[in-house]
Image (tube, rainbow, N blue to C red):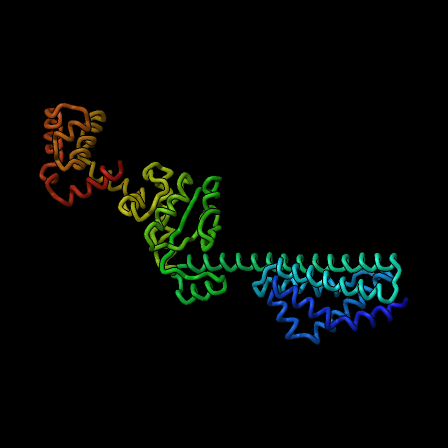
Length: 379
């Protein structure tokens, strides 16, 4: 029996075939069922075109055409771009081929096709659908990967824009739109040690809205600063054990300032001057201010401790220790004696020696403030 007779027999069944397909699709993927109704003529033409290709391949072994694969790859790509799920498209293929084969096999028996010819036809039909399903899945994944790579580039560009000094709020908003990133009222920087695997794992657990910071040697992320109760506690829980530093919350266009302070806090953590886990910059602004520039702090120390230089080294160290304790305990001699593990009389003697060296300057609030910076904060 010729392929023309089979084609004619199937063509008579197309209206019934489409009706059966619509009914089957309505339960699983109703959007596609509606598409069949709205584009019946185009779908009919497509069914007949597929039929022609299947018969050609069954009879002549015609190879797959590049344009066919490209067409179905593009179907997969459009599925991703339209926000649809790949399983829905594959379900359409599976339902379609089941209905298609039901009518094709019935028509083949009707025109008297031999069992061997029917078997060859079945193999061709299901191989054809398997190939087009593979092409669509490949297209879907390619589009997904390309969209993801583009999104990551846009997100990196957004971080660069926010870290510019000064950052333009309009430029930040434009970059955020390209990155499909909802701009929060405030953001914060999270930094981890580049070689710390625990820190890197912690970054991977952050909110999906977190933006990666990849500016060697900096490794971290920009996170929305949640104002709701528990937001900080949740972030602290994610970062615990990662030796992370969390910058102060700032508007997005002031992110560079948050990063600068976070870098200082990270340095102070490495120097064991800050010991929280994680370190929140907002809790340690005073320490950051004091230790921001070590050279200035050293210069201040040399200046305000100059009167002690007249003493022998061993005595100098004891007097310095006593002066620090006096400032810390606001002159409470009992507390000083307990801290330094000495007799109160010893405290009285040392304080007398300090008054000899500093004179009335010890009663000057400005001098005491400078001594506090140089001794209490520094130590």
